[in-house]
Image (cartoon, rainbow, N blue to C red; front, top):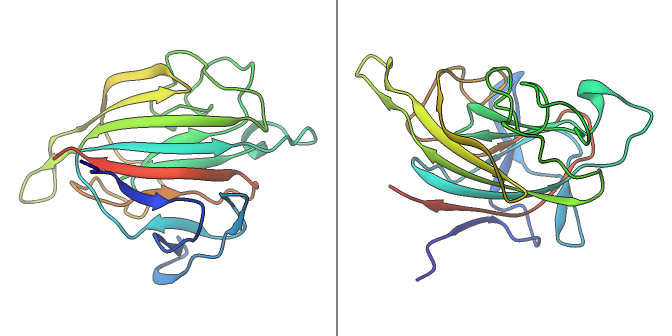
Length: 199
């Protein structure tokens, strides 16, 4: 039985809306460029219309070759699970694993190993998340737990995520949320994005 929710199959952006963190209440039509079955960052973050709790998330991404750039301006984007936890996307080929390199839970945990491929190659994230459980006042009763597989290599194994990341749809932890793809002014491409709910 097919139980995947397809967010992007290469044909249209109907599964997303454009979102600007400076105008958080505004939802605009998604307008990233689509070519050859992939969508490429142009302007504005994309947020999925579909929201999920416990889930297996699959994302494929391609980082452009930007030899004139370095650090956080070289192929930067991000995959925000539940719209509030960022798994970093960056040109990290050959770099030491750090909490701001590709595969990191940004600013919280570095990946166990650097599983990055060189730029211009398609890469995969498979993210298994157990959603946070909240108390009635919104405080965290049980934090989210994530396993992240990057290009077939486990880079986070049942990692307890203590807090949200800045720059997401919410500035707090949620029990259910969307997928956000970040615009960091780098033409990163995405394809074959789906979510399998595990609730």
